[in-house]
Length: 474
Ligand code: ADP
Ligand code: MG
Ligand code: ZN
Image (tube, rainbow, N blue to C red):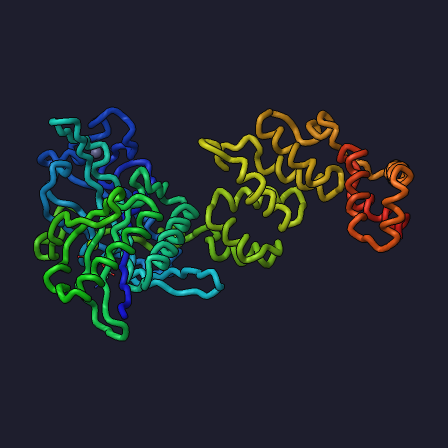
């Protein structure tokens, strides 16, 4: 039997206003090569100057991961030539990274946790982009020099599931800290997966394969599974040593297989050496004091939602996984409603109505409206069923909750006299059923409730209907 060993490297693009070493804007949707200057074009004589905002974002992440934030870190040159890198080297942090020895907990469905060690995270500059159009390839340097944090784990994960749990947690933390967009499709959260196998019980690490740039959690899970299969089959067939070599592979989403891309470079190939054009990066006490102030993180928020609002572990997990949803929930709670109801109306009713481009950020029914609607249910002004109609209406029309309840005539009747009158009517109209019910056919009680609700066009308070019918029919 084999054990799977996985280590992850994630490149997070930081959402600073300007680039890492120059004052060019970090937005790449502009016309090609317009956000550039002599520094990020690597023209002779132009010198890099460190953007302090990057140290702030790095410190925030280090604090969130419970890591050591090195108050002095250094930059190094990693030499390689690519057409989209005008310097022919990348400025990175090889010898002394800004963040060391952090960790992050992943949560399993059964409530257990596992700690994944984050060995280090370092600051580095992104490359530009090659654009291939038929026979022509162009280079766009708008992205060149954008700040990245590369976050590297120890080989602590033992399954594709653990890898994805780690990545989702890290993703969520980045969004909570608001240090990056972390958009996988747009490449602001890029994952490299290192995978090896070993016989169970063996402590040593075997040859690893690196799978690069897979752009969804689902495909990462798949890529790990097929790569593990490839490695274990090679082992079983006695060709492990020939087949499994340290290399970079690509995941083919269509054929669902990994394919060799290039041999994996060793550190020596990069000829790392200290960057001579930059000063050391220093985080003073004063800076640290300020930069290490971070907002409440997903784990803490989850615990608090469970304690303070009585959420189930499952709901707390779902709601806090995503900062937008967590804030939406908190805003709903400001309407003074129960946590359980807020969670249901948010994660079930509203979520199921969000389609296509409509999401929590631009939903026509904001947290205040949804919270108000839940409040009206709790105050027995509308039934749960009627509230769904109100919600449907609000998804399509710009309107206020109470206005819609009136307009659609959905106000619940809690006037006991009025409900009693309807109950009497229905009882008189169905003498046979009343006999049968009294004779022991208990199921018929539901029939009477249904008839009264129908006669009231759904507006009667079901609880009141139940009480009155029970009193009348025994
Ligand atoms: P490099 O600098 O060449 O990228 P590192 O030693 O920094 O290599 O490791 C990169 C990543 O690979 C880390 O996340 C590490 O945990 C992981 N890793 C290293 N050895 C193995 C292995 N045998 N199996 C799986 N992952 C590994
Ligand atoms: Mg690496
Ligand atoms: Zn520039």
